[in-house]
Length: 230
Image (cartoon, rainbow, N blue to C red):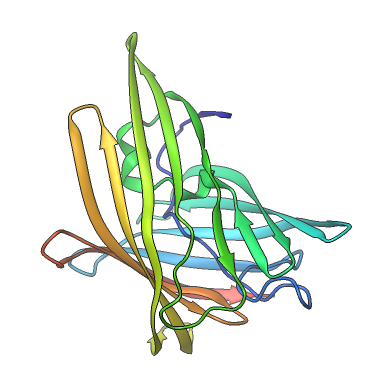
C-alpha cells in the first residue's frame, strides 16, 4: 500500500508509451531519458493542462526489466500543480504498470492537499495485441481521511478488449494504432458511476490518444500526445 500527500490532481490513467528493449516491451519506454508530453482537453476541445513524463531509471534483474516514470502535471496556465513517480515492469511479453497510474485527474482534484492510501491490482498490457483480444481487469482503491471522516473509493477497469486498428493524427504526427476499449466503474460512498473509455496505442511510441465518454456515448474529455523524444 502506498501513502501519498495530494498537492493537487494527478494526470490521466493509462499513460503507457514507448518502445522498450528488444523482446521486452513494444508499448512502454524502457529507455532512460525518454520523454513524453500529453495535452488534456475538456469536452469542448479546449486545453485543460499538460502532463509530462520522463523515464528516469531502468534496471534489469534476470528476465525482469523495471523502469521509473517521473510525472509532472501543469494547469492550463503552465503552473506546476503535482509531481510523482510510478513504476512499471516488463517480463517476457507482458508489461505491468503500477496501479497508482490508474487514478484519474478528476478524482484527485477533488481531494487535493489530503493524505491518501492507495492499493490495487496493476494494469497489464501484452506485446502481442490483436483485434478482438480480451485483456485482464485492473483496479485501484483510495482511502481518504477528511475532517475525521474516512472516504473509500474504488476504481475498476473491466471488459478491457482490443477493439480495432485505426490510423489517427495528432500534432505529434500520424500513427497506426490498436484501440483498447475499457469500462470504468467508480464507487465512492453513495456514488456508483460507470463510463467507457478508449486508448489508442502505437508500436514504438505508445499511447497516442485517450477519450472518456458518458453513458450516452458523448465525449467527456480527451488526452493527446503532443511531443515525445527518446
